Length: 107
Image (cartoon, rainbow, N blue to C red; front, top):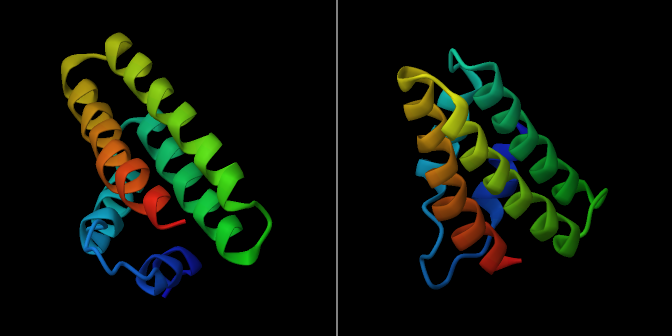
């Protein structure tokens, strides 16, 4: 298992706000996407989560990075062609739902 998967699996989610499997699937699929932008953003989420797990960044630092990436994803979606736009939009929606509304609430 990766550090990313281990960290997500280890989060205490008493309220059930984080869909852990969906988040892991979102990042895994995005890392294989045709769009370089989508792959880069997935790698960023994974790297930041691993840095959070190892203490390289604080929960506050993580919470500052992720919303900025969400905004970039939404801006990039506007510029992309239709097929790539759908991938970028799925990533942006997933970041909002699983990371901002899920992981960040648990930190």
